[in-house]
Each structure stands twice: as structure tokens, then as C-alpha cells.
Length: 165
Figure: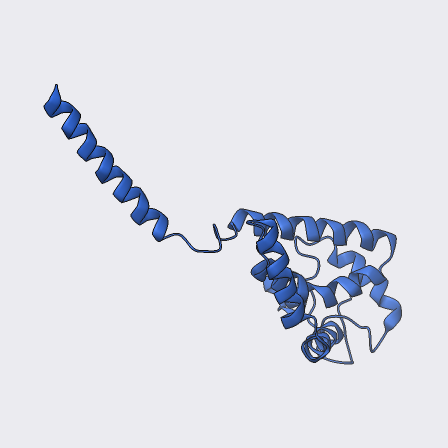
């Protein structure tokens, strides 16, 4: 009986040591953001864009501009604890929401929007194009709209002469 108790104590020590080693390998900020959470956030964002665009096509233009910020938010903000959430939100704000960071991001989004739609050549078509974009799985993915017809099913805008019509 004594031998069995001693053997069980050794096993307990070994298991505690193993648990300690595993815990040391975990990240200090908690568990990394699960891919499922990111996918769920994108799904909710896309659904919200589709719903709001039905009410007002201008919301789609706004959502195209916000897409990059939303992606950066998803990649950077942690929800492992309230403190971690506050810390990472503030870091995200400082890094991605300052004017020097927003200006090139907005310019890039506007450039892509002008390539993917007829906003410059025939603005009257934009409401229809916005509604058509909401029929896709990812309504703010302008790259899919600009892709070759065979790849994405959309028309490619070649500049001021055409558009996504």
C-alpha cells in the first residue's frame, strides 16, 4: 500500500510538471482569436452591409471605405479579457485611426471604388451596382467585382469608359 501511494505521488508530480510546461507555452495575452470568431464577425458585417444597403445605397460606399478598418480591427483587437480588450482597442485606434493612417487607406478604397464601379463615368448607375454587390457573399470585396468575367461573374471596369454595369 505504501508503494502504491508513493507511485501515485510521483505520477501527480509528473502530471503537475507536465501541466506547468504546457501552461508556459501558452501566449501571455490569452488564447489567440479563434478563426471561427473572425469568420462570424465577417458574416455579421456582410449581413449588416446587405441590410443597410437595401435601405440606402450610400451605405455600401461607406462600408467599402470601412472594410479595411474592420479587417484591421478583427486582426488586432483581443477579447480575452476586459483589460486586454481596452488595451488592444486603444492600440488599434492609435495605429489605424489616426489621420496619417486613414488618408492613404481612404484614397486606396476610393481608387478601387472608382475602378470597380461607374461612380466617375456614370454615377446614376451606382445605386444599381451597390444593390447588385449585395447579392454576393462578400458585398464589399471590390477585387471580386473587378475580376475577369469568367472568374467572378462581374464585369471588369477598364476605366472611365465602362464600369460595373
